[in-house]
Amino acid sequence: MGGTWSSCNLPRKKRLRVILAGGGSKGCFQVGVLTEILRSGKYTIDQVYGCSIGAILAPLVANERVDLMLLLFDQIKSIDDIMYKRKFIPDCLIGLCVLLNMGPAYESVKLIDTVLDSLTPEEIEVAESKCHVVAHDLYTDSPVWFTGESLERGIRCSSALWIAVPPIENRYADGGLSGLFRDQYILEGENDLDVEYLYIECNACNACNVKDVTKPVPTDPIGMLSTFHSKAISRLNELDLDSFKERLASKLTIIRPDQNYLLNTLDIDPSRMKATLEHGMSKGREFLG
Image (cartoon, rainbow, N blue to C red; front, top):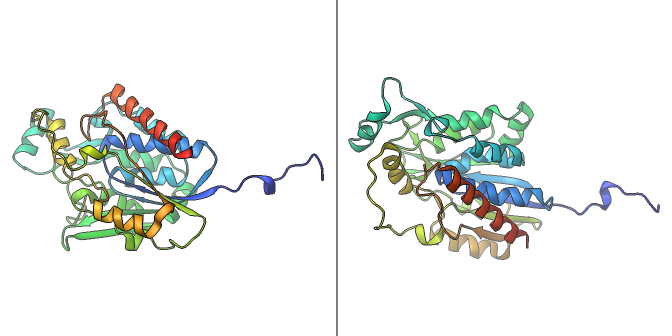
């Protein structure tokens, strides 16, 4: 039938399984990458695997809500937009809590509520069907995956950075405590021919395992927390990456920043966050070719 057009004529979107590492505020790099990819209309999200900030972003990614991902980081102006403060602890004593290991400096992660409150019940259902988040079980010293109806609980567990916030149920803590992305879980269904895998790191490669001796030891509360957090950023270590590469070959793409614009994982400087986001967008365009 000449002159007509139907959805059958539209190019079929490629299915993408996204693996999101942890990294605190550096997660805005992941947002930049995914913004370009999803806006292109070439891909649809099949599954999302996340840890820490990657777990927090996972429901938005699963629903392809680019608008909410961008708004999330745009609204962060201070640590109060990320964490709930503990009662009766003034800001001047937070650093002391960290230094002397006097217990968590904050009550819980506020950013999680910001994300979940922004989604409709239908979108929550989509997230529960597509998202898988991982936390560290302090009892067994091993990773635990959460999905389905346990997703919200899993996000809170995966983001419970020790020292910053208390372990969930006194058992589960931030996924960055150990190498947690295991191919046995993520690679279920790897034989699907039309699925691609995308792993997005938050840290520049040369910063992953190298201590920067040029940086002064932080004395402010946020800087001190960030130092501990930076040591715990969850990522695929080289052995895990080699395993992924061997199993997936051309189906796996790894994207990481060329440089770190943000000073640490709790750096919320607006200009540096914007630079990180824009760098992520450039990497997203590179992925699209």
